[in-house]
Every structure is written in structure tokens, then in C-alpha cells.
Amino acid sequence: MPNPPPPWVTILRLLAAAGFVLGGLNHFKNPDFYRAIIPPGFPSPAALVVISGVCEIAGGIGLLIPALRVAAGWGLIALLIAVLPANIYMALHPEVVPDFHVSQWMLWLRLPLQAVFIAWVWIAAIGR
Image 1 (cartoon, helix red, strand yellow):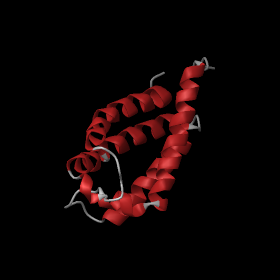
Image 2 (cartoon, one colour):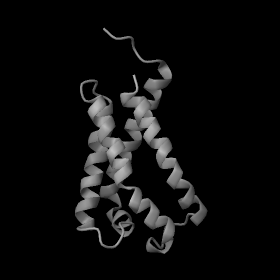
Image 3 (cartoon, one colour):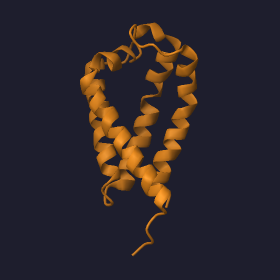
Image 4 (cartoon, helix red, strand yellow):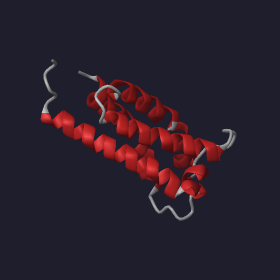
């Protein structure tokens, strides 16, 4: 039996799981927001919002199930990379979400944070 992870890894895993599940649920609570930040030219924004929301929820739950944890981690890393165009589009065009009151510099700061989230998922799910 492998050694249990250090407590801080378990805490990171629980926080990531909660964050992804809540973020995924938000795709269904506020779908207009997510549709607005999908760059023009991407097919079926409504379907992409649903798919990404389901993937976030499934990945978050998967982080909590040892047999699924590594696959969930890889899936969430792929998802974090896949949504990068939407994050870039939002940073370039914050006006697409008129009622979202965040400074544009914060939207730009969000881009390198994507690498932090990827590292977080790696530590929580894969890097053992």
C-alpha cells in the first residue's frame, strides 16, 4: 500500500475538487457569461459551455475517487488548456460581458494563473 499523501496535498486536492465542481455548476447557473467569452469562430458556444461545465464537475468529483484521480487530473489539465482561448478573448475584449466588473489588468493576470492551476491539479492528482 503506498504512503498517504502529505496533508497539504490532500487539502489542495479537496480545494481543487470543490473549485472545479462549483465552477462547473456555474456554467449552468450563468451560461450567458460563458457563451459570451467563447471566441468568435468556435462552433456551438452553448454546447461548449455545457460540455466544459460537465467536464469540470466530473473532473472535480474524479479528484476525490482514488481509482479515477489520475485520469481526472489529466482531463482537468486538458480542460485548463482548452479554455485558454476563452480567457485570452475575455482579456482582449472585456466588453463582451458588460455586467462583469473586473479590471482588464486582472483579466490579463488570470492568463499566467492558468499555469498555476495546471500545476495545482498536477500536484493534487498526478505528481506522486
